[in-house]
Amino acid sequence: MEKTMNLTLRVWRQKNRLSVGQFETYQLSDVSEDSSFLEMLDILSEQLVADGHEPVAFDHDCREGICGMCSMTINGQPHGPENGTTACQLHMRHFHDGQTITIEPWRAKPFPVIKDLVVDRSPLDKIIQAGGFITARAGSAVDANAMPIAKQTADYAMDAAACIGCGACVAACPNASAMLFTSAKVAHMNSLPQGQPEKHRRTLAMVTTMDGEGFGGCTNIGECEASCPKNIPLDMIAHLNRDYALAQLKNFFEPVA
Image 1: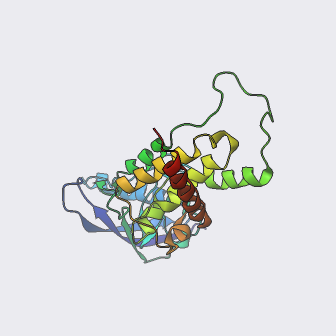
Image 2 (image 1 turned 90 degrees about the horizontal axis):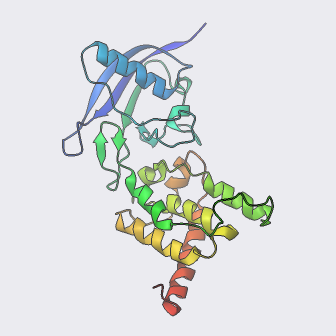
């Protein structure tokens, strides 16, 4: 027999980035414990529309835990209470009947609220864009194994590439630092042979862009690692700090034009 629950939802409602937002409280009945968190929000929105009210705006896309769009804070935790889990892959069985659930957007100055639970995360895109290109032949397909890569290096690059750019690390950090995100993107490209020629320029450009977008500094609190739905390790930041120091040293002696 399917188990259901009744919930009290405190949802942040904000018309646009210029308006003052506030929490609105809603009652939701007979929610299946097998439904996902986003499906529960769909049910709420259907109820609101049926009652003549505007539905709750929230970001989503793949609903498979790989795009990072489902950015929201659930009971004070980015993506909710389950480790290594995005909001879209979080199921209602992790909550209980009669529980009050508070849902709000990412809280970080570089992420202004667009509407309700939707925030502008374009600063993360700008950091990636600052990284530019890698040296790789375009056009025809390259021969298989033309550039041998050690398994340890490939595994490390794949671990870094697992970052989905959701911004949970920024939302969880008391300083709103984007160091874990930036370090994952830098490590992904800098650790592979194809990314070596632009390594120093890329590192300086991405860190400079990160600082310019208003993200805070890293003080090694570790909330970023704890909240990351893809379990990006904190040592990625150490990798970035090392690459940044080397890039600054090289730029001192051989300034980039």
